[in-house]
Length: 279
Image: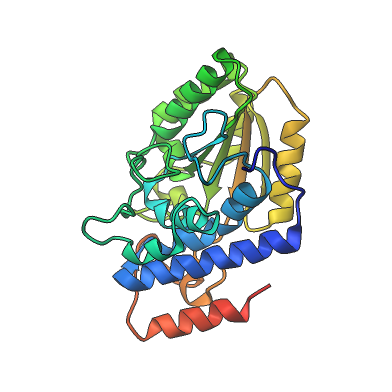
């Protein structure tokens, strides 16, 4: 049981993030397309949380005192499955069923899958439910925390800001929102769809303890978490600047990489590029 967060080991976290990226490519190659850019881009956060921060029991995903990781952005499921398999919550071999008929590993994560707290995908709902979870945990007298991952484009949803107001109003110091800013959504860069910047200033104006860091740097994420722990009584927003397809230049450099269709011969290139960047 990960009853207390382990001592941070940066080289180990970077190796875990690399392993998550391997798992993401493994799953994406099976279906030949998908949200591989998101899975690669968020691997550093997931590795840092699951192997350096979260309190959970891989043998008992429903442990009442677990920290909750809430994936609001359902299509990032490929990254979450990689983390859950690496952490021992689901079997590694099950990753080969990703996206298959009857599989527990659907392209948008369902809460029937072990370790998945919320059926995400209808954007704007994750933070609202996370506020409820955090408030419920406090009312129950539990010390568990709620870590919610949402996207920059999701901040275009009004319900997100209603939840932000509620989180600040209730002083939910056990609530952490990670906002993935990868500058890409289905219809293009958020700046062209509906401008969001300065996003960190908006969260601060809503009463959240707010930081902005490089989301592809585990050291920066750990430092932000430490600063959050030292600021009780307020919810915490950590805005992450990430790169879609991180670790695989073939995908990093695509103009549109929200949903990637990959030619069969490109997988060998992608995997060799990833291994060339191994820590």
